Image 1 (cartoon, rainbow, N blue to C red):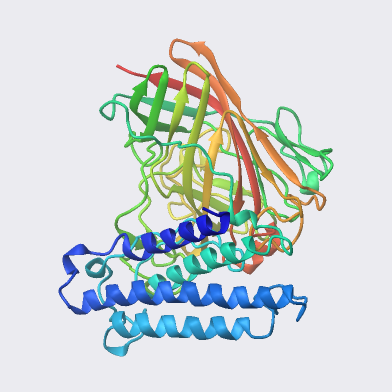
Image 2 (image 1 turned 90 degrees about the vertical axis):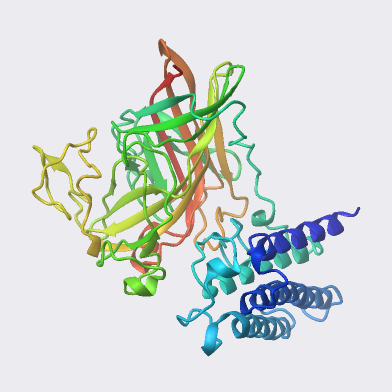
Length: 512
């Protein structure tokens, strides 16, 4: 089989899996409105993929023949964009006529029930080179249309670009570094013990804007230029974000996160989400219920429109959080970040190799507090200093004194960032960018205010025995951060853009 044929089969397989894989089989063959909707989704989205790929191939063929010298599809041959727009219009019309209810409009409030039709609850976790990240929660037929569009765009972009590798480099988004299987099936019955990780303070100074002044030791990694020369050290226990000149952020410490040991194989432990003792230390994913997280807190919702229309304001209920709120001081644009777990945390700990690898998917909720001195409410002398529970009793966590008991005002919510720490590892995590763009849709080259940055490296620390069943360790991760939806925040931080973090602490293994 040729490479192009293999990629073509993979692209088609992915499209079929998304469009048909979660359909409600009880409707098959019934000729019900839901069954007609199912058939329309599959047929329209597959046709859109083929039509879009054909338009791209014609565009690139014109360049190979010397008819133009443009990138495809835009500006391309002057025809591809129009052809794709017509294909998109046809796809939307066909799906929404069948699935959009009496008004034949997707998202109009009278769509066929998504549960009766059946469709993936989450769109594919891929990034279309000419569009953006497809990963999003799907709650109505409008979300279905957006998802199948993005998925088909990803597949057609990647297949078309592979066929003209002499003209354009194959996009990194099409062949991301595939991490190992962090979450294998349990080798023995689940819940045979637990691992608890408690965060420790890192360096006292994560570095200023553009690393002026530089970070203080202890270091966890570095940023290099295209020649492999070090541009800056990354401080341990710090978060670095975006392409703009943001100062490093010291992460909270003193918190505990608990993972279940769901299986063993020799000295290798399989890890999964745990109920812990409550939201502050459990590691289970969000949902299934959805409520507003902005100025209308607690109200049930299915769409952002139910919460005033702010993007991502209608969210799956957060069951667990990764640490207490993180304060990010940046003048009038200071924000407080609450990191809710999006899905169950999972991973592997190898007590022979003394290594840990985790997959942690977060929904980082952003609150624009504008308080540079204290971006997040703190627990001071047993009372919340500000926020929804100002003046009410609390217990602070770690040296920063933030806590889930002292959340910011819900009216300060401005958006959510889906951030995937995959992997967070005791080994090495690297994010390269030969052309300076670490992430899809990044508009300014470089990382963390360093325009010449071409490689970000975080290095964890292996498990080191510190007592019976107790180990010291550090985890590192590099990743991409999408746009927040707030032009102020995106401009100040430089989003979409890269991210890097590390956190040290103590791991305790408990197998009864």
